[in-house]
Amino acid sequence: MSAALDRLKNLTARISGYEVARKENMSLLEALYDELDISRKVLAFDDLFLFKAINLSGVSLNDETLGAIKDGKYLQIIAISYDKEAKVKNRNISLGYFGRAEKVDPALVKKIITFVLRWRFEKSFRTLEHYHKMIGSLKTEE
Image (cartoon, rainbow, N blue to C red; front, top):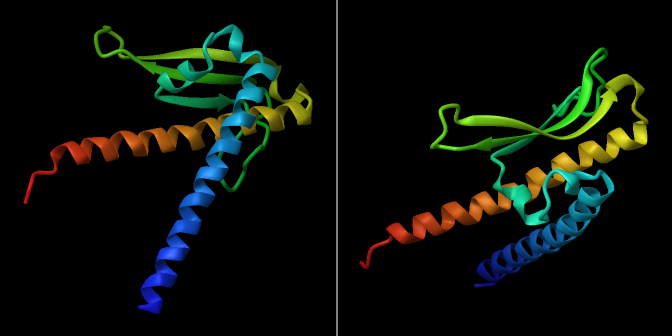
């Protein structure tokens, strides 16, 4: 019984930790949304999550080379939208253009990377919730 109780306490602590991290993430993400002037391209903050993905050009987002500048490339935040009715389904939209990657202030590069990673963090929660609801709708009474 004690082992089951310990597992439950551990699980509860982990879940509450994720919720705290998620709330903090949203607060910081919204601040970066304003600071990076993404609000000029996406008027409502919550509309950011209508995009299928947000990527960077000019800077690496790989684990091994996170933040590495790609010389000769331009630093941009690129959102990918999807329209199943359109002839061309995927569309890239520049949310922010910052010039040659090697000339951008390193502090700004860090904020841009942080914005993309924090967006992906929240988007993963929303995707998880979406699939959880879908699975729930398939459950039948036993």
